[in-house]
Length: 227
Image 1 (cartoon, rainbow, N blue to C red):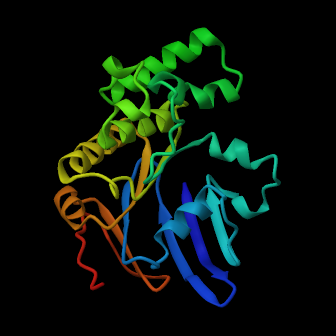
Image 2: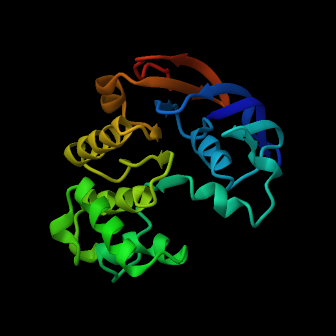
Image 3: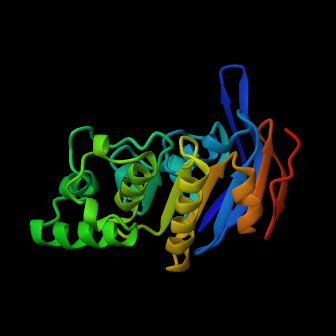
């Protein structure tokens, strides 16, 4: 489903990734770990074509994403749900409207929007907060709204870049358990994180990076990299 082939990424004189190779199959749950600047976020951005690799290939569903034209990129992203560290919710808008935003942009009918949004909020356990604004929600609840927004269109892939970076330990565990629940439905889940405890507890595939290179790729792995 996702493949990096001898992929490198450079910003001016900075090497973000160097000759990275890996493959992720449909339905996997994969952690990307490593210190700040290791290349975790760069990998995420290359997958959803926020960035284009300097060399090598990034394939999503056998499509070389670097070759997509500007108007084709949104079509790629509709196959994905993206969860951000800082939530990126619309201030002053209800949980319903924050989740519905993507569907409205796609021209989905109001009846279908209501069905999908309520379904997504139910999955993340926030159906009772449907009318609450971000200002009325805790950090963990805001991130759950972010996850509902990510899954509302039924994506094949969910990409979560440091999804627990702004959360306390209990909320972090809730978010990871929710992502695991989504993965069990067949969705491929990719998570970049610094959270040693959660990675060690969940025992998923762990791809560890350091200085833009993969230093280990272990099924049922742990966060052991020396930072």
